[in-house]
Amino acid sequence: MNPSVRLTSAGETFSRVATRLLDELAQAEKEVSANTFSGRLTIQCLPTFAMHWLMPRLAELNEIHPELTVDVTTSIGPVSFASPFDIAIRRDPAHFSGLKPVPFLRESSLLVCSQQYLHSRPLVSPNQLDDHIKIQIRARNDLWKRWHSHFPNDHHKNNQIITLDHTFAAMQAAEDGLGLVVMPYLFCEKHLKTGRLVAPFGDLTIDTGTYSLLWNDRQDEAVRKFTH
Image (cartoon, rainbow, N blue to C red; front, top):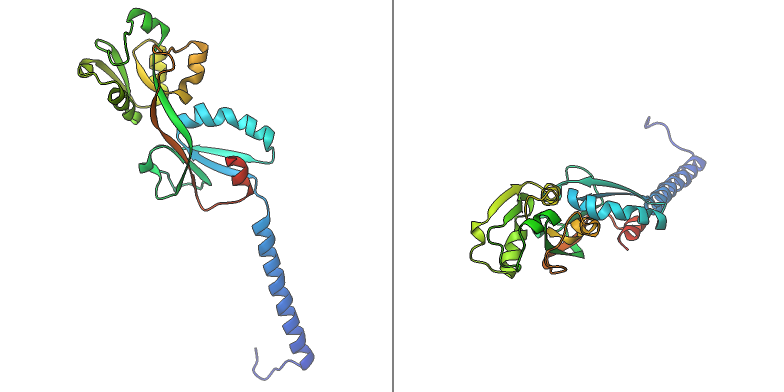
């Protein structure tokens, strides 16, 4: 502004009032934006968990809260910040990536196989698996370890082992009669109900962990509706 130009008294009054009104308008816009409900949530979780637990429940969630839109992204290993997300779901504490966990679902696992396999190789007890074929999941090598810690057997190292990368592949292998697999119940529940898999020892299960919700700096009405 030219230093020789001066506002009149009326001009100064107008400038003060206009500045105050613009500041109030900006604050009001900020508050409205902060309180505007956003019904879109992005959930990041493990592929098998999404397929067998989360996706079947989204229809019910949509009936209860039709205003919510849930986008599901999948990844393995530690929570990834490479793509935006509102809530992550993980089981292994080593994968929480510094986020505070809120436990919400216990995981129990059991021994399963196909009816065909069970007929060809009967099982006597959960710790007598000699001469049986074990299907090992590379992404979940804790499952057999936990089974043998509950049901010790010094001879289990002599078993033939088939190793596959992922849970869904191991489940398919068991369904095809290739061997025994220790599988989380929440993944194979439908297969057991339809008879595609059987549990030789009934409802005998072992504890294999807890799934937790991990928030990524979002706490609003949409998050509350999704998690309750």
